[in-house]
Picture 1 (cartoon, rainbow, N blue to C red):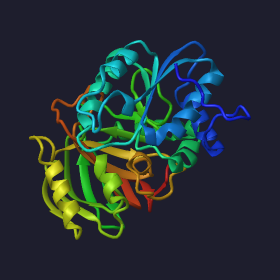
Picture 2 (picture 1 turned 90 degrees about the horizontal axis):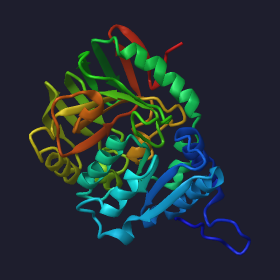
Picture 3 (picture 1 turned 120 degrees about the vertical axis):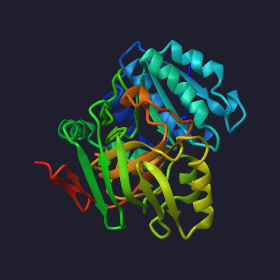
Length: 344
């Protein structure tokens, strides 16, 4: 069991400014109850955040186990340690608060297979930072959930969604009733794990065409390396959901992104189409965990979360791409202008 690290005055060693975000995570988003079994996974970089989360778990009376990745296996992880997978099998709730390292996506997918199989209420906090705990995690997630419900009711009827941005994005996505729209608003149930901070709805599109300008961030380990791309945007040309062209002044990013999206036959295929709904996220900070929740469109190439969307193909990779300041039309109705929702 994870024991709080005490100072002489008896207070846990973590920044008090993390408390509100941790309280939101444990009490509002995951709704942890007294006596529930919780697995809390973190790495050394996130120990302060883990301490804040653990403090909240103690206060609600949960039975929790803290597992430090760096003590269990050499990183980058080739596989998720069996000790973690076994702990998850015995839990009702789990939290993963750790940075993404190159080549670790497969290990996280192994973890998520257990989460999905045992229907855990899981908070996925990959690349969580104190800044995010003090910003996106302080959101009013009940309000975000209300907005997400209203929005998902509208898009589930849509045949097309069109998106344009100040940076030059111009895409049209087509949708099929065979594929589910999923709400991950930050309020997490046993039916679907969610990223924290939450605030998006997503599906796997039937088809996407056009140009997507990534003047926000790209995902996975590339995010921490390249950060905010406003000054050197990545332009992606898409035909029938496949990447057919890439342009970027940062040639190193260009080649790394091209390599990432060439790993398998579906790595260059749009697997996810999403709309961010976290109203507390106002601009890009250079971290995909929060930035993909900004009101607007983001797409991901690779794995389509088929276990939730109902898509019929898979991929071993998944990389999100975020833009800025969108106008969005659902069929012929405009629902966003310059990044602001127009929903009544």
